[in-house]
Length: 77
Image (cartoon, rainbow, N blue to C red; front, side):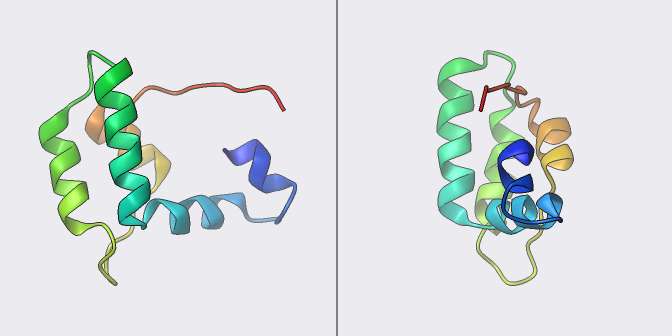
């Protein structure tokens, strides 16, 4: 994701953080991880899902990965 945002902005982390605030994004990531990652932590995911979309909610990709044991995936552009 970071590679893609570098084409659009000089601050890809800000774009990703804003994208991760969205409830639909969190739910989609949770579904993906549940299906394809046997080490995913669903209870931690539920906490993020409850808060996603609220004005005060922020989430970095690092925090998401560390808390939920989400996988990191590479794609070629």
